[in-house]
Length: 245
Image 1 (spheres, rainbow, N blue to C red):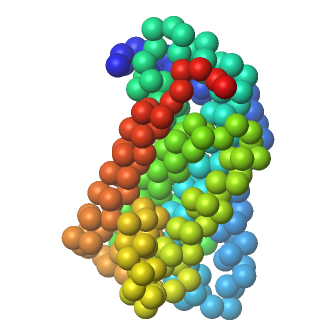
Image 2: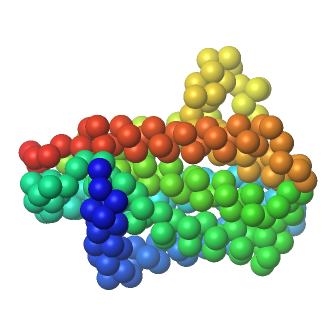
């Protein structure tokens, strides 16, 4: 692995992303618009908005980064760009880390924008520091990026990428504790939710929502989300094909 090659890959992806204004709009403004819509949906019940707004700060970046990263990487594969790149002295780890680094830049901006709007403009009431919300939101965005890179290796078309949403994202959304406490679920469902990274993302947001201090559970949640992102990136590098079928 070469730092120079990784950074060169990241710069190339960022240049391409900079020319795609619709993708930038999707990344930066859709989560903010959805949070604002939710604010007015719960306009008469501020407590309900506080209870669901914080977890969604972690879920929205994960989903949007998953979609954008998987589709963008698939386009590079189907156009033959990936095959040409990998025919050069460029390792799989260089390529995957370069993509992850490139997409982490808009992920930082997205997480900061959504967190700032939620806390300072929509008056999201959290007991802990907004910086901790930002940390979890950023890690969730990186996890979404990692999942998108991993899934792109198994899809042949953009339609197939979208089909991974109900298979990979929706079960996590249903079991993460957003709609019902995880400890109130059937034992089998609770056991499944305990191994899904989105569950820990929601738990981390809820810890910040309820506690003024950093708790041991919050540290555990952050470590699990970060570790899941690192593991998925490693799997993405391992499953990356040098030839496009």
